[in-house]
Image (cartoon, rainbow, N blue to C red):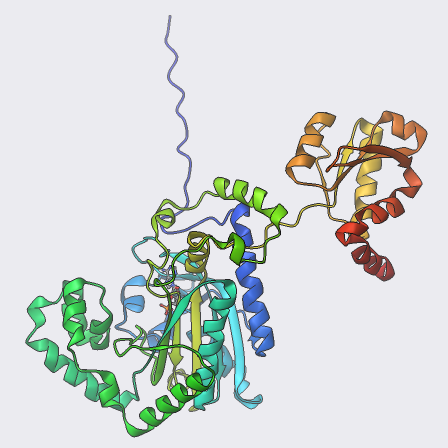
Length: 483
Ligand code: AMP
């Protein structure tokens, strides 16, 4: 007898390395962050801007810098079908500045304040908190050089983290003007030349290409060497110095705590003057937030726990300890960038924050965020006629503002009741064959299991009355007025 050839299973496809799916159970963190960012942007009058994800490669070469890691090694660059070199955006500031120039925003009242939120791409080695597609939001203030702008942007960023519930530290430095930085760069080179052999391979290359980055290498030997290196603060020109002193005065007067960090340089060419980063504050212990965080009502805790168990978070992220990624966000002045991209001389300052790292920090610190809203009602049905009637009822109730769950394709009542329970619906309304004949409907209180039959025509006022204790009536009345 001929033997059957084994069935070949098709290899299932997987997401690309360094990319991530954000599953429904994780969305609450993303919503929590996005709401806070939008709230802050609104309060401080930042207008949202969405730039294309693809831009001309030269935009990033001219702004981020030809010899930076991002442009040299990390950009997704390719030729389009027309033969032009285009790149997936690796960061946001370049695109914002291009848009500022292209749309003549110089003619609007200055400063122009913009914020963005979206995906960015860097072909980097994936590890905890580092992806090839990640999300950033950023704030840019274009057209003003006053030190109060620097201080307010730093305070705003710092407060954003604080209000999310994350302990962070604000690291501040000034890298001076282009001219003073050149003098400093030479001093740094002199210092490192005789110590070159102790540097890691990357830093040896950085010596000529991106000298200032020698200061923020994470290798132990390089870190040690950087401790005695000349400090940029001693090389600042008069203007940069005065500007920086005023920035710090404003921070002091607003009582924003900060750390002066002379090794903070940032990795992109366009920065000059004030630079800053937000780091997780590792000195603050992970607290059990049940008592601390008022966002969560006691009833939400139970199912949050369940949801957490189900969250498929990346293996690497699970390993990440709170604060294991150095920077949650960073920014600084870029007073030459508008001109470098073809605009007029225009001072500017910006800040960008990585969302994935925020999500990791929120989870690792066990910070509770508002969960998915529970439905007011579950609509259950039995039989074809009932299904038709419930389908219509669902729409009527939805338009009145009720939050309803259903599973119309299922027949069994038991199954539907289980789902209503799982979703923590407050009431289940049931239409079966008997109810169809009688013109009635059943209302089941899911808390105590008590069921009552009411006239189908009275269902809406009856539900409104019952849901009043949950604050639902007010919501419905507003909707009713609109209808
Ligand atoms: P940068 O534009 O390099 O200053 O980055 C600003 C912030 O974006 C960082 O502090 C991170 O929070 C985040 N970030 C940068 N690169 C990545 C990446 N590859 N994966 C995830 N987050 C990133």
